[in-house]
Length: 285
Image 1 (cartoon, rainbow, N blue to C red):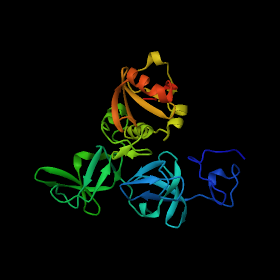
Image 2 (image 1 turned 90 degrees about the vertical axis):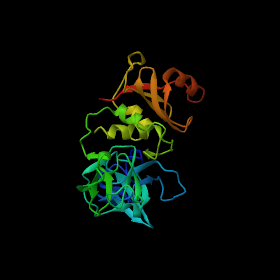
Image 3 (image 1 turned 180 degrees about the horizontal axis):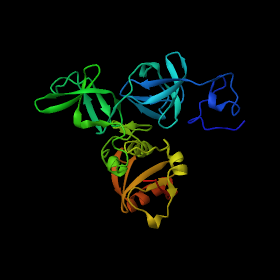
Image 4 (image 1 turned 60 degrees about the vertical axis):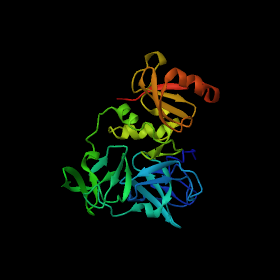
């Protein structure tokens, strides 16, 4: 049998997704059942163990397919990028309504009602998806109302799909000073490839999750002499986006933030540990 990438293909000795029948060996194959993330942000892990580091994160309102539920964990595949892993079953809902809007600012607050003076209930990241059923106004401030009566500042959300075709580099710069988080994929903490993926998602584009996936398939290769805004620079295990030919934006472990850095200075600084860039790619934008 062909060895497949376990990050993108759901298979174990006892169970595998239906689409892999004939390609992998498993005791049984299942199509899975749909579910939706019901918490602000949740880590996806390679094993059902909170002591294991996260591979990536899923945001409120994102869809998954559930292949197995056991011992308080769900084995799932994310709809947005096909990533496979484990998350606590308390993070999912089988009945949550279809989202209508997406959060467009780095972070925003969910209030118990349309009143910013009330203690907020939780913090939502850019990319979170919610169902808006109406609007309300308090002292001139407009709020988008959810079905349970909670409220978000109306300017912080837009209808899903409304941002398609926008400038993903502009989105990436909104993350400046966001803390670096290995496996992070939210406005609360993010890693280098998560920054690229989430910024593209906000403009209606899909992108693989991890750096190796992005460097192998995202857009097309480009020569260094032709680099322009929006092109990607790859090192071994790292990716940055060009804000302009002289400047990169990247989530990095040097500053432990999303930072703006001179391109040539970054090449020299990173070189001692990761050598020279391994390639350059131009997403289809």
